[in-house]
Structures are given as structure tokens and as C-alpha cells.
Length: 304
Ligand SMILES: [Zn+2]
Image (cartoon, rainbow, N blue to C red; front, side):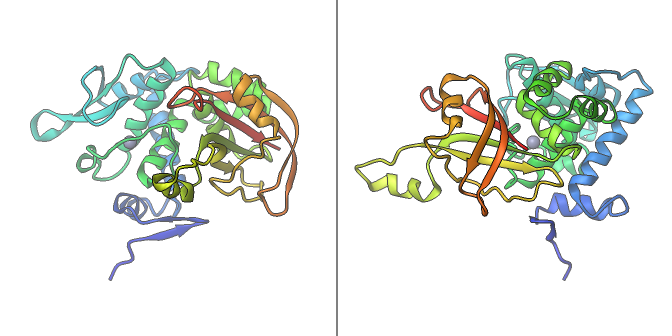
């Protein structure tokens, strides 16, 4: 029987859409991340001949050049942000409907994410899949790859790489580049790390319980306290310390203060949850949160 899952580095892929993608583009790479970046770059390169320019790069223009009609809509069915809708005879044409009430940066990323879906073979069968854009959740393979592709579309090489070479990775360059490319701070930080041009890692923290505490909460009277925990981390190619997910930040850490005061932090921090403990220079900034008031804040950290 044909093998329908494979491993690249630490990541295992088993989603049929991803397996098909690698089978179809095996000559490019065996790594679906490389393939999606490559395909997104090809679309951008083609579109430049038809007038796409930037920064900022407008994914609506890219979509139009690709024959996909971008359309504002307040009646989205599968997503709060954007979705693909096949139309016309045999569903041959596509519309990207997007929510005009979202911030511009989020609209841009959502549209680019939908464009990335069309880079997959057989995407027309999958367009109803539940989308969670901007969460960068590696558990959902296709969504993770579409977020990667979206980053490449909004912040394409060579412009973005040139900017990183000039400015380096820091909070200051993050803020400048996010404005320059009309991208959110989080999407920009993700893209900065994947350029692999610096020795650093990105870590995003949010308030949550440990997975084991969630089971406990259902029948306990004394609820455990929500802590600032690692939601995800992305190392650049040369950052070798493994940062485990869900680990909590010590309450004495200046990162708690960032989440409360929303003032940025620059300085040395010791993390005891890595092995060996990580004593490193870090820069951190508060991100807008996703849910309720008290624990709404998320923190983005660059580790050097
Ligand atoms: Zn999606």
C-alpha cells in the first residue's frame, strides 16, 4: 500500500491534500513548506509582469491577476474572515469573499491565505474546510501551510529579505516592516523568522490552562490559575534550543509585566523550562488578544 504520511524534521504530515501536494511537486522539494513558498513565489513573479508591485503588496491585485475575484462580503458561511467560493459553470471560477469589517492587515492576510489554498491540487473539493487563519496552528497541516503561503504573498522575497538584511530582527524593525507591508505584527514576526537570516526564535505567549488542568476544572471547586504559557514557537534554522508548547512563564518574569502594562521589554531573561535553561537577550511586545478582557493579552517574544 502507498504510504500516506511522511515526516519532515519534527513535523509529520498525513493530510491527503498535503501528501498530494508533495507528490505533484516532488521535483521542487519533499518539504511541503518549501513547495508552498515556491508556488507562492511563482504566482508573485508572474503577477509582477501584470502590474503587481510593492511594498505594500495588495493580495486583491494578485487575486485578480490570477483570475480570482476579490469581493467584500458580510455574509460569510465558513469563516469570520474570508472564504473561497467556486462560481459559474462547473464551478470553474472563484471568488474570495472577505469581511470588510476586519482590520486592513487582517483582511490582507485572510485574502492571501485563501489564495494559498488555491495552490493545493484539488482545492476545489476542500474549500469548505473550516478555516482558522492567523492562529498558525501546526496541528492543522493545510491551514498552517496556507498561513505560510500568505506570509510569502504579503511579504514576498526579494523585497522582504532585503529589508531584513538591512534592518535585522528586532522590535523596531518588526514595527517598521509591519507598517511597510500592511501586515499584522504577528504575521510579520512569523515571516521575519522564516527568512532564516538571523540567529533567533519567535515565541508567542497567551493566558491559558495546562491541557491536564482543563480536565481538572470540570469537576474541581478550586480552579487553577490561568498562566502565561507558550502558544507556539518558531526557531530560525540556527536556533537549537527546543521550546516546548504549553510551558508556563514564571510569575517573576518581566514578560508578565509586558502582558499587563503593554509596555515593550528589552533585556536578558532566563527560561527554566528549556533544557538546559536558556539565559538570553529577548525583546517582547504585547499583541492584541483573541478573547475575554482580563486574560486577553498575548505577548510576542524574540529570543536571540
Ligand atoms: Zn484556510
